[in-house]
Amino acid sequence: MLQSKLFYKTNKNKTAGVDSVSHDLLTRAGYVDQLMSGVYSFLPLGFLVLKKIENIIRKNMQSVGGQELLLPVLQPKENWIKTNRWDTLDILFKVKSSGDKEYAMGPTHEEIITPLAKKMVFSYRDLPFSVFQIQTKFRDELRAKSGILRTREFLMKDLYSFHSTQADFEVYYEKLAKVYANIYKEFGIGKITYRTMASGGSFSKYSDEFQTLTEAGEDIIFICKKCSFAVNKEIKVENPACPKCQNADFEEKKSIEVGNIFPLGTGFSKPFDLKFTDKDATEKPVIMGCYGIGLSRVLGTIVEASHDDKGIVWPKSVAPFLVHLIQIEQNPKVAKATKKLYLDLQKQNIEVLYDDRQKNPGEKFAESDLIGIPYRVVVSERTLAVNSVEVKERSKASVKLVKIKDLTKLF
Image 1 (cartoon, rainbow, N blue to C red):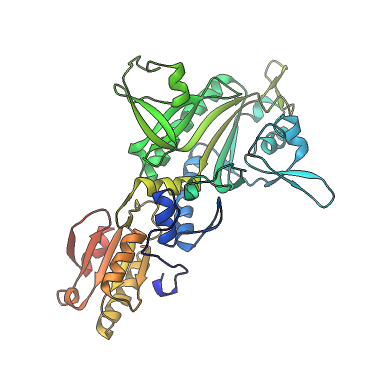
Image 2: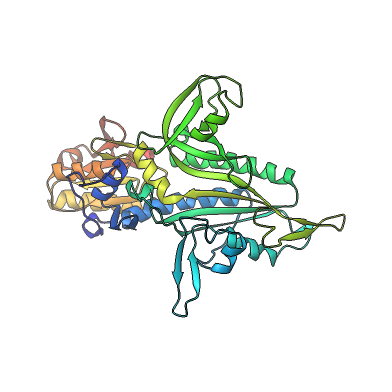
């Protein structure tokens, strides 16, 4: 991508009125644009990161048998009345058609996937299975805040699993917990993300949240100093000692919830009469589970966890580009060499943003730090004199000269 053609604008001044680092940096670096409170546009840079996050999630969901589908955003009121959530879910966006028919704008999809499954499930032979989607959700948050960390419109992955027995559900649930840990590791935040015991709400005694440590977090979790088991604030009241090792010494930390998994039991299958005929010819309700990750929230959380005073420091796995190629002088020799290197990198399937603009080196370097691409490669008359380029990793302070012929070996 030529930077001169990129649809973005950066701002070197701190964004006014923001309450999180990620909001400030993503706005200033040209990744997102705020349309109104709780609603954001993802610009090309931000969309590239979002797609990287999406692809990591998709790959991992497919690895545990998840089949991808896409469910409607617009949902019938009748389905929400069946589950008694039309008047009790305070974040539900409700819309009325020209004929005064009422609908919900989907904040979640249990009310849609359960009656759909009823058309597919008849026998124990139809179970188990799991389906997932990556789709925009709408939640009428009373207080949208912290940029894309808490919004009214956001991208989310939700997977639903369907089982004939509690034992089968529990095996799959633990499998998903391990897959989630792998997902956060791939995002580059695995070391600071904890599986955290939480209340199960209406469907079970306990569920699990995945919490990433950051000072920008709205949540409080308690991490056992002996075994690193984590519980959230509400659960800590019920469990003064660690549920895993009985140690009573915890470390209190701020965190952001970046995903959750929880049992649904028969809480949705019963209202929709989702049953199957078992081997003994008896009818039984299907047991369900739900597993969610907010993609846009993950994106913001990665920035909260990975930045410095100059800008964003993207992990390689989710960066919009791997290499930021910067041309210093505008003379024909440097321009020709840089363009050739740009094309060579592309031939090697290395994602590269080429700063071909007529700006001074200081401006280019400052903007490169703000945008946060993992590798900065600089071409100048000085480096070309020794058939080299200057390479700096965004996460490190050191700069080194690398022979052009050896450059692709770094990536």
